[in-house]
Image 1 (tube, protein in one colour):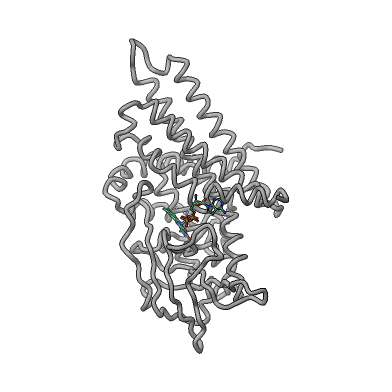
Image 2 (image 1 turned 90 degrees about the horizontal axis):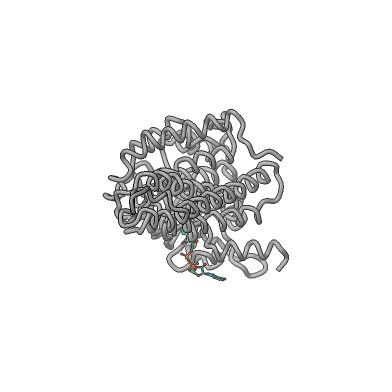
Length: 382
Ligand SMILES: Cc1cc2nc3c(=O)[nH]c(=O)nc-3n(C[C@H](O)[C@H](O)[C@H](O)COP(=O)(O)OP(=O)(O)OC[C@H]3O[C@@H](n4cnc5c(N)ncnc54)[C@H](O)[C@@H]3O)c2cc1C
């Protein structure tokens, strides 16, 4: 067992780290404050190949793996989570369903632009009335001749309304299974399709430089060929996508937690009180030591889940553990980093204020902490 990175992985980590410090850090506070999408940063991430990291070269990808994506997400989130979640959603929720389940034609149509970062795709599962309980999906798609007619709405869909969003995949009820349960399928809806409306962006607590919208479908017609994978496979498809996505969110959470350590060390050395740096107090040192401990153990948890996934072994429980643990400790570290910064920690100009606002969603998105516990308990046979 060896958790050390290879030279290639270390080089990727270093280059993303440098990019985050030199390109993201100087501009992100302004985007965060103004709630604007950082197109120029995203364009440069595309040029670096980040959107193609876990995809085969013959599809236009970088020939890396899912762990490479996780390393990049960790380093981005160490500086900023809006940019990191944009990449996470674009790759693991946007392009991956097409890559894994798409027909040859769908792959040829969408993957080149998605993998280069020229275009983004959204993943529409959550609805205004149901999130954790996907069986509660109300959006319906009815086959009318050679077209699907979609009616319903989706809530909180990341990357669904940028100027470069090309399409969203939407889960919809397409019939009834023999056991009486809903038949769920996934359908590709290109941006601009008549009947597909994107509401203005939400006013969010955090991730304010990322793109999130409610979507409505009103007699929205797309070709029958836009069905992604087999009819009725929607449930199985998003379970697979979300299992993987949890490892990516865990990596992002570890990045935020480590960013809290970085900023706290810097501030503890600079800030003086009672005639000495606050970092000279053991109470502050212990806080930072505990933050490092949490970031380190959460990192091991996502490395383990990723290793199992890449080895083709079952990884559902380990992915849920990694996501649950990393999101919990990200919130812990953001709280402590804010405390170490005193009043300045409450000022938006300090990165820790962003970390604090960005941390809470990690316990909610891509399966809440309660849902992770349900997955772990179920996997333990309960
Ligand atoms: C910024 C942002 C971006 C997002 N991006 C996307 C996206 O790109 N695509 C997408 O499809 N979704 C997206 N989501 C949605 C997100 O995945 C959901 O919000 C999340 O899954 C929770 O669903 P919900 O909000 O409906 O909460 P609910 O499911 O209504 O849950 C409410 C509370 O009840 C708890 N709960 C529910 N059932 C149980 C139970 N059985 N036992 C115990 N507790 C329970 C939950 O844990 C939670 O605490 C995003 C959300 C946000 C805020």
